[in-house]
Image (cartoon, rainbow, N blue to C red; front, side, top):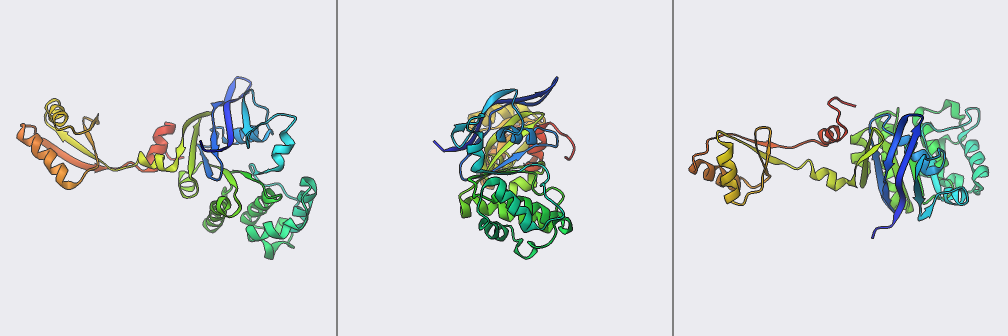
Length: 305
């Protein structure tokens, strides 16, 4: 069985009558980039805060690195965890290096770590500049550097590419992808952009209106976007009988028949069999759902996020 870095069971958060997170069972395998995907307001940040103990759960339990999170062991677990939740906090009048020195003191980490994390996030050349003069991308990278102090085994990043320009997004993405292999970290990264998660993650969890509606590998999500063949005929009942006799797997959808993707020769054979049985074939189409369509279908949204 794969080792789990994070497990939640029935994790729930209510604010008054509003159910923000609804009995979520997350399973984050060790050594992966886990993409936590959902529309804005779906419950991603609240879930991550409950994992870190920043927000108290109404119900359920959290296990991090095999230990159940509670008041007794929370600090021990958090010493092996780095996080960047919502926007990074910093002292604008201090330099990047001075901000990191403060975090080293708070985390009880030697200051020799600073040059290492600055190198990882590519801020060595800007370490003496005041943070108030940093671009948004540089501030985001400084926040990541703070999270990486202490060589954490687990990193939680909440929308780390928010507000960045394309070059900044690419930099952060490449950095996140490199962390498991280079440093043996597990990364839980949230986003409302499917395209981002598609380029970063190995595992995916999709949350909508507080409920976890999909959790599996990115490969399995891609399975849903495989090509299929759509057939429309003048006699669907007879077409169904013919395909059953031929042992061809199909589904009925949109007033037609959906067949798995197959070689042209096999499609021609199906059409020939249908025609020979007196079934008029009126349309043959190759169909493929995009990941975006699958995501919008899962979250019940008919419009772009």
